[in-house]
Image 1 (cartoon, helix red, strand yellow):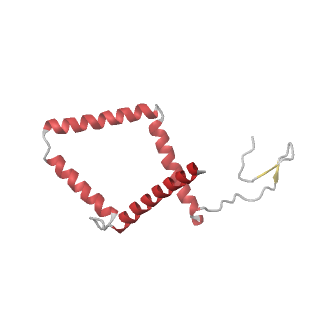
Image 2: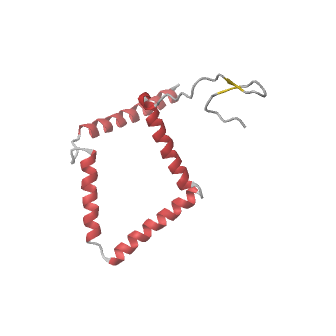
Image 3: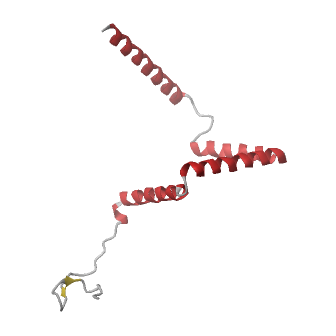
Length: 129
C-alpha cells in the first residue's frame, strides 16, 4: 500500500514538472515571430556559414552528407526511396479525399445491352470479345 502511494506521488510530481515546462515554453516569447521567420533566419545563418567555410570544411560537410545518405539508403533497402514516395502520394490522396468536392461522379450509362450469345447485360461503352 505504501509502495503504491509512493509510486503515485512520484508520477504526480513528474506530471507537474512536465506541465510547468510546457507552461514556461508557452509563456516564453519566441525570438522570431513565427515558424516561417525562424526557418528563414536559420537558412540565412547556414548560407553565411557556407560562404565563409574553407575548401576542407566544405569537402568534410559534403562527405558527411553523402555518408548520411548512403547509410539512410542502406537502412531503407532497395525500395526505400520509392516507399517514401508512395507514402507521400498516399498522404496527398488522403488530403484530396477529405474535400468531397474533389470527387466527381462518373457515369457510363445504364447496363441495358444484352449479349446475343449468352444474354449477359453490359454497358454500351464496354467492348465485347
